Amino acid sequence: MDKELSYGSDYKFIPATSINNGLGIEVLPDLFAYTVQIVNFCLVGHPDQKDFVLVDAGMPGSAEEMIAVTEERFGSGARPKAIILTHGHFDHVGAIIELVNHWDVPVYAHELELPYLKGEKGYPEPDPTVEGGLVAKLSPYFPNEPINLGDRVQALPSDGQVPFMSGYRWVPTPGHTPGHVSFFRAEDRALITGDAFVTVKQEYLYKVYTQELEISGPPRYLTPDWDTAFQSVKKLAALKPSVAVTGHGQPLEGEQLTRSLEKLVNEFYTLAVPEYGKYVKKNLH
Image (cartoon, rainbow, N blue to C red):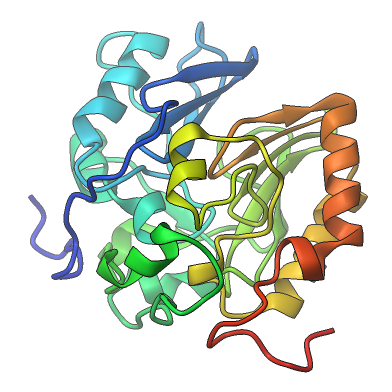
């Protein structure tokens, strides 16, 4: 393994799961979403072609499963052109070093995420005091130290294009993290949101396990800037997506997606923003 690549010392397997663990969904012919324990990653590209990318990199300890899923869809020995990140939280980069070393591919993320991916800076600590259930209470035990991908990670192009994802552009959706991005394809209005909004209440253990469908803002215990998160949700809603794959929860499409996003925008400060927590400001909005 390349010595310059390293996880934080707190990186470890997290024994959390859901009924969707191991479930893959072909959302579109060239958009495949797969759930590793409690988080989704995407394979973007037609399965009969070799030009595809991986969006996000799963949970700690999931590399072998992710490689197997990729080869099942694209063939033995298949590897993506790149790994594209929505952001750098542990459940989106959990297997990235093993994947980078196995596939020898570049990683792309927003410029503002690079300090967290080059070992220079840690994200704000998770907030166990935030309104929510057991997952929120357990959040201090989640890996949070910065990982170091060295020169294997680089900034997404400033013109909004996404390497090897033809037709998509990256959309800045900060709030959950400073450099969080989502990916949108205007041709069919397909949207990959990361954690800008999700379709499960990620703070509650029962809802995470059952994957109860419920549109929500980003996970509360790891979101330090709620006003900015709201602006990001409004931005995505204005794109009028036809289908959305979120970082947590089931994909949404059609009228259900439209109605859900409209509700989230209109009721963001009651649906998404917690009533209390160390990152909740009394003068929000």
